[in-house]
Image 1: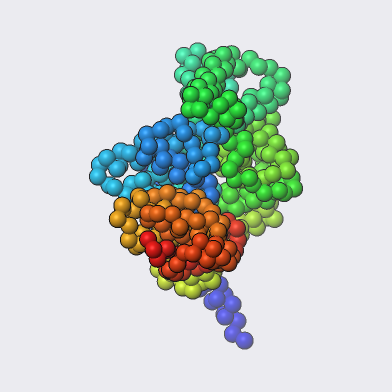
Image 2 (image 1 turned 120 degrees about the vertical axis):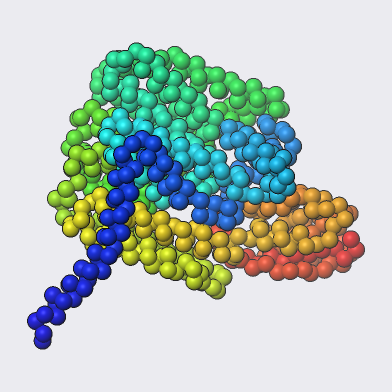
Amino acid sequence: MNPTTAPEQRRRAGHAGRRGLNIAGRIVTLFDAAALSHRNAILFLVLLCVATLLPGMFAIPPVNRDEARFAYVSRQMAETGNLTEVRVGVEARHTRPLGLHWVQAGLVAAVEGLGYAKAPRTIGIYRLPSLVGAIGAVLLTYWAALAFVGRRGALLAATLLASSAVFAVAGRLALPDALFLAAIAAMIGSLARIYLRNGADASDATKHAAILWTALACALTTKGLIAPLYLVLPIAALVVLDRSAGFLRATAPLVGLAVCLAVGVVWFVLRHFAGSGGDDALLTLTGRVSPAFKGFSALPGTYLVIFAGLFWPGAPLAALAAPIIWRARRLRAVRYLLVWILPAWLLFELLPTKVPAYVVPTFPAIAILVALAFERGALALANTRLVRLLWLWPLIGALIAFFALLGLALFDHTTSFLAWPLLLVGFFALVTAAVSVRDYGIEKVTLLAIAGMLVSGFGVMQLVLPQMKSLWLAPRMAAVAGREACPGGPDARVVASAGYTEPSLLFAVPGPVRFVDGAGAADVLNETGCRVAFVERRQEMRFVRRAEFLGMRIERGADIAGFDYTTGRRVRLTLYRNAAN
């Protein structure tokens, strides 16, 4: 055996690793330049958010069910001009705060007014407020972090939030989560400056109190009465731990109470005069306490498990920092950030139903704590066992890429040749980051992992998910229905759907949509005017029997096969028309 073989192999492996780390060195140089000034930092963070969120924003169709419902309500507002009626088909949705609906409806109306006729059915336009809210959440996290760390640490905290997996989802969906996250970050930063300085500067405290209550008002208009919970719990915890409520005087608490009452009264009046009655008006005030997504039942500790995926690639860093942060919990700054995390987290862990979105508002505080540990040099990686958690970077990255490509292969019998190189480059960056942490330090490999996430994310969001035609049934159904002749135009065509009742179909079709069973689909076709019906194979027997009973001659059109990911089953939908019409 040649004794130089093993060293030679290590040398070659080292060259490969150094090539990856050369890229990391350039990324660190860019990060250094961004940390030189606030202007550079803001520009860096905005570009990072755009690079994270823009891929797929216009290419991925409406996602069932919450996003499709939310966008459809906003579309109705834009088309009818009624800004208080919240209805999905025949279902009243009076438990939703209206703030984001108004923003989306106004934006759609403005774009349509500029001459883009398809604006009401272009989901990307409804997602733009979420993009703005996500950028705001990152910039406000940067601002909040400046109360605890220097500019570089604040930049790192905001970067960790902007690169997290849940941020990539929330910032792409036409839902209020990104705007709510921005409001939470503003509350963290404003209250921190009051609490840490103990109200020493009265004019400064007044300014930050105004920011605090304005942020709460924005949170109320997007999420409802659950919003104050995220502020009340930290304040209550601080009062108990400090055995003093002195810092509250500088927050002008009566003003905050007045803000909550004013927003509540406005919602109550709007709902009352909209004709929904007092019960719906009271439900409106509670907003997202009962979400459209009902969550899933799971044991306490579930949020801690899924945190690894939600906050990826920052989750392993949070695990590395956790023991050090806990030992420093008596420090005033650390204690303040912990109360923004632990009370809400423990409360939601104890509830039997788990909704991942409920713990996301704690992520800005988590990111700032990790940055604080970075800045104090606490992540010296002395604990070798915890360092192994960094292998979650390539592991979770590989799982995301694998299941995305597997879904494309299984359901659509194809692959994305353009995505493969990007996914491989991203995976290589994540592996290199995990391997090289001891030699090159935690900051450099963290930035390399984030770069790998961006490359992989582009491949998945822009090149893989939009190609999964089997998942996006509603746009295909709308296209097939649109090819049916209708003298009154597409808005006059009534589309019945038996066996597929997802709200994305309401959004995709320009005219009325009726969700019925098989017999109901035959009844719709028996009416006069432009009518088509999509019948799922499990409803076909009822449909045919009812059509025979009515003496109706039906014609079969195109078949659409796919996978309904909300119910987890394959579906086959067939278009039918009345031959007499």
